[in-house]
Image 1 (tube, rainbow, N blue to C red):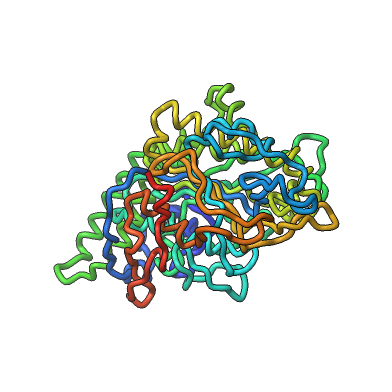
Image 2 (cartoon, rainbow, N blue to C red):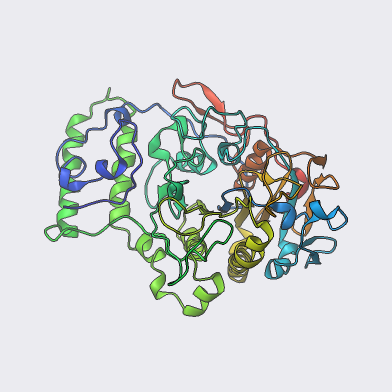
Length: 478
């Protein structure tokens, strides 16, 4: 049996993408291709493009709600129960100070902009706003086909032809996998699930002899994995090409001058399936075993470090939008109960676990991109779905807070070495120049040369803005 690259998510007709790309079932490569909803896909009109300095984006997503007042927006003059344990340090950008436990990152702040006034009212742990700019509270956090599309899905949609490697890759697992709880946000929503990201799998684990407990996480090891792309014993590349040629002949007979133009959706899936199956470039990008050990050490031999290194390699192969999430793992496997959701022992967790590994990986990424010249055409963004309370709780932790937090931009299209917006004296509420999640999305689109005012069709064909009422943050744009 030949299995094509895919994930467990559902296609538009209810069939999983992995099942729809299974040659053994003879749906794609041999018999009829039975995706009626794809064959009836709506006609699409690409959004208006503008010149942009960024060719691609690497989004580092810190799931759980990072305490950004302990990273990017410290308040050393606030009362003890507000300011916490960490001290700010100077950086390579005059006047920009960040946490003492981010010493490597401090050397790259001349390439970065910190937005300290992000806020939304769409509910805690709601990832939909940060990925889509949609800020309405939802009844739950599960993805829906009626959701607006994520930024990565819009990039995938705008590709049009569907040839070559995907434009949108999501690592290391689907959002919420570690809690057995699929979260809304990074999907294509009403654009159709064929524009969902290529999502990897992972097998996270800790070091031998380590066992995490709430408030005391361990280092999460592992590598993001592509689902099987191996040829079966009886299927060679020549036989695969023969099947493709035969299928194309049947397709030509089916088509007529008045054929439905929506057949393009079927062609897109078919071409992508063959491209991924035969792509040595994709497999090579995910193979860290052949990497220079010194490069692995620089990024960090963690799941987050390996995923970020692979993201770096993928943009070299032409992938336009790569997401790396620092996810929570506590229900599926016994590693990392907390991630960035630090209700307990916030400072101990950040100091000994989260900040050192983030600092190592983020600085390695910027150094790698900068030394090759790729930082001039790559936008790097660090964000969470929310922030954390200004007041420290009785468990030495910080609780959920959406009223004010920070997002960091670096690289292509960004005026480095600056701070935009301000929180109040306790990092509780926005004091100056508020920024919505829609503004964050609009800024990313602007850097990519995608018109933030562009629209895409919903399921009924009605035009919907990709960044509703969002405005690019002109103050940080180069």
